Length: 73
Image (tube, rainbow, N blue to C red; front, top):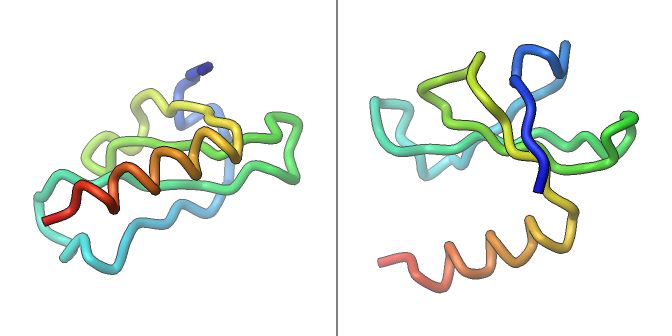
């Protein structure tokens, strides 16, 4: 798993879950970088938009989403 500064990704479209509520909650944002030289899914902390972003393969991101939704209460 690689990481880089989210600001270095340039003008990408970040999205977060509609369940986030928009407040100061614990949310992550994702960006699809599959059409870029990174060919990954970027994940960052919504409270730190210029902080680090993790770069995950599509399969690793799918596993993350599966585990996160399986643990949801």
